[in-house]
Image (tube, rainbow, N blue to C red; front, side, top):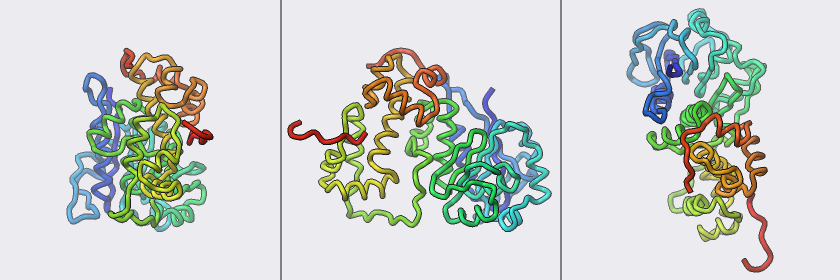
Length: 335
């Protein structure tokens, strides 16, 4: 049976964030094209739910739908009342959350984390929210370990995200965690969004948008993606944009949110995941194709990034069978 995701729509919700779980999870398919998730929306009562915009949304289900959920998602709302002001649930919201079964995976988008925290689900756990609310969130819920600088957190059965687009990143992360990189990448491709932004990537806090006339680093990224199996030097990447290493590094961080070295590592992990899911290549070959050099290095980096080694990952997320196919003083490679 498909994994059931129930989205809790609260008064004052942001329509964009309400739609994120539907947009991402509904497009996840297995190899036969069958849906991997079933998505329901419920409110504190069935019927119209006012939004932050000039329209309401009509939900067919009341809070009893939460009892059937494998995953509950709470998007942001701007009308949380005592939840936001005092850190406590209203009687109506407490009664609704009482339907949630023990062991249900809990997910929040942006200020939806206030609801999980007020219910005690985040006590002792690492969590995040929109950077503008992080300080208030921490004061209100001192038992929560708030990380204001990341896009999302994954604490097993409880996951939280920062604002708006970070909710997309978190939902894609969940699809990737549940069904592997191949399925998540296809969802991202259909949604026309980047397939992966690492949860540890910084939120873009008061960071100016690069001026249009300033050169970007996109050509260097494309160049590097074609050469992940080779040693990559920062100076070579900077040369693709005719920039100094210092300028390139600064602008790369402005545009990608991470250092060039971190970005390359993430791309290599992603390539290794795809190869493990879709081919029978031996581990040494996967390591070389992904740019890790040796099976030992591949194992080290996958354990650090995913918590499992390549053999266990292939066994869990196997998608299909069949293999696909300087002069002077050497400069240190980025990785």
